[in-house]
Image (cartoon, rainbow, N blue to C red; front, side, top):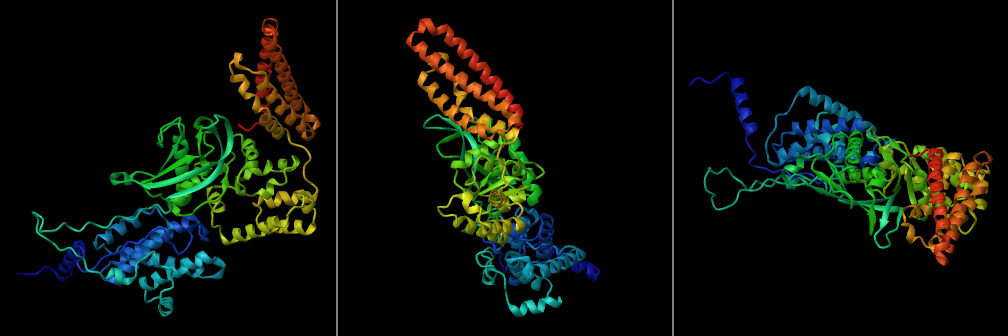
Length: 586
């Protein structure tokens, strides 16, 4: 029989061999989560990490997997590809392909050469001390795989002499795991031959952190007392990988709220969830599929989804990112994440900031726009707030995630340590006296010089300089006045015949005390705002007296009491509208 042309014949044979499963070896998929470095600490932008991940996939495919060293090298390359881009679909498909011991074509030679060249260039930068500890850890791993991917490269020989440098333990199995023979053999179709066929290894879960928590101020109702208020609440995250065909579904977030179903399609959380996913995709690149993130707000409280709107989005975005990157957060966060990744002030930001006085303290991440509100805390003589919280500003989701991390970057860790040292020496001194010390101010100025986003250091330095503001701007005065009369809100919704003299009296006393205390912080030109609110409190005191008189003689005082109640209700509504316009914050 005449054979076909030799090159053609060999090409056909190679194609047939490429389609056959490997019979002599196996592939141990890399473990996700046990990484040698932190992705968020690398001196690489998101686009560069996507490119590196794609290049590593090209090299892994070129390995072929014909022998144990090739299979382990491919596993290392794919481990790095997934560490740099957790949602890389090509990397996950290759893991599955190698796990099933199916050879893949090598790919385009020019593309592979280009991938090698780019990786060598990046490796040269990552190896430098200036790149940082996490970059050096990535370089050690990348050097191991590049020595295998291009053994003839001038730098490869030196790398091989050093031996394996990357921290692969617990992440990629040792070479022995890739030498084990497959237990399965080809069997004819038909009834089972006394045993079940071996099951393919399950694909690795894209979830790198199954649970996490951050704090954020939200409206909620206490289940025990029924009291509704804005509180600093812990937001708990749990992440699950879906089963079966659901693993192809996009990343989703569900909110456990009593007013709505706990699904991402529930309104009004649907839009918030979609916005967060868009922002994460912009920052992280393609997102892993099949991941369901669930959020629970607070302990023993009901989250008020309609009242909070999208105020939870900053906390939710940080927690969703933690689930797929493994970067655990530890902070209080405030803000609304936009689809383009920017971080903006939420409506009623001042109320959220003020409710943190009784919060947990620690690191507090705010939008950049919050800077204009912070001097007002000094005007209100709340200097201790900036010792209680280490406030950092963030312009976008990337900075929010980075600055809320439990294990921050070396640069931020150093700044926080310097700030903690300043704070620890306060002791029992009065903050104003302590900050008047020029050496303390010098330390604070150094922190601000290194990181202009360190708002606590900036505000404390301003306090120490003696140039802090003594009064509130008009919009913040309106915000604070609106907050101080909020205890009156129950009166408007209470049934008329259930208004008690004691409840009215207690509310009046609290509001009058707080409003009169605020007068000293109002500028003369804004005094009419204060006068409106003070007159409202006086109207409440008049209503309280009328309620007392009615309780003694209902017949005589019923008509005057109703007139006072009507006058108070109208005044409360008018003042509320006036303050809302002046506050101009939602």
